[in-house]
Amino acid sequence: MGFRTDQVPVSPAPESFGISLEELRALVRRALAEDLGAGDWTTKWTVEPDARASGTFISQQETVVAGLRVAAEVFRELDPAVRFEALVEDGAEVKAGTALAAVHGPAAALLGGERVALNFLQHLSGIATLTRRFKEQLAGLKTELLDTRKTTPGLRLLEKYAVRMGGGKNHRLRLDDGLLIKNNHLRLAGGVRAALERANRPPSSKLAIEIEVSNAEELEEAIAAGAGRVLLDNMTPGMVKQCVALARQLTDRVKLEVSGGVTLANIRAYGEAGADFISVGALTHSAPAAAMHFLIEPDEGTDRRPSVGAKRRRKAARTK
Image 1: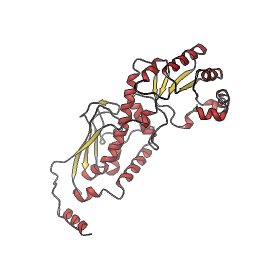
Image 2: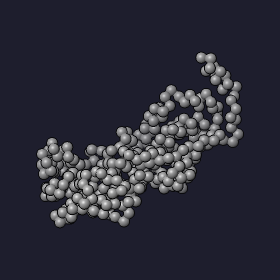
Image 3: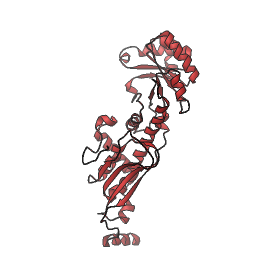
Image 4: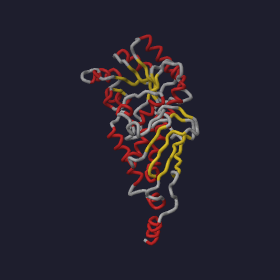
């Protein structure tokens, strides 16, 4: 079952998206300000101020849904009188033609929030759907699917939430979540061993440490220097298989992550090569928006004929 805004809080609990209610509402307000500008003039001059309507979000493709509570918050911000009823749960996979949510209330609020609500819902559902497709390719394997920090500025927390709804797991949220020593760090630090020696000094030694390598020689050097987690960067599945075999000969404590060049067509091969983790930036930076639309109908008893006041406003606008 979904939720209704007259049954539960409109917005998610802070732990759902990883942000507070205040942060989510601030994000929604910025999105609405960007879209509304000085006002929705089309609705103001064509729809009666007291008109009421009902709208339905409908999926136009097979979709993994994410972001329903964000869409609900869009309408709450415009008018608390709007009632938003989710008909499915985030994380549900639905077929084309499925009704996702029903919205009831002042027509002006439904029209004013339509695009922003769809933008959030389509974007987050697109990420969840692509994540699910990648996850399906790893069925039966122990390999875990991870996202990256390649996210839309300002939307990282929501996008990482969408990844979770698709069945993936989150890598680092921010740079302060742990150390990931990459090629640019290696150049500046003086190589694999030098970088790990620096990283393993207090206080950084208290954080999770991972180091990137590009070949078997660097992997062996990283393991010898005490690396607990190594990222195999831009390797072929065959190279990954060789590195996994080498690592298992040397130690049973190191975890191996694959990143770079991973697609739906080859992720299975990387998983079968023995990687513990596979991180895919495309989950958030290249996911296509899910196809869906929002159909609005006037409520029964709503008079669609322009009132005298509306006629006067339109006449006044034409004479200016």
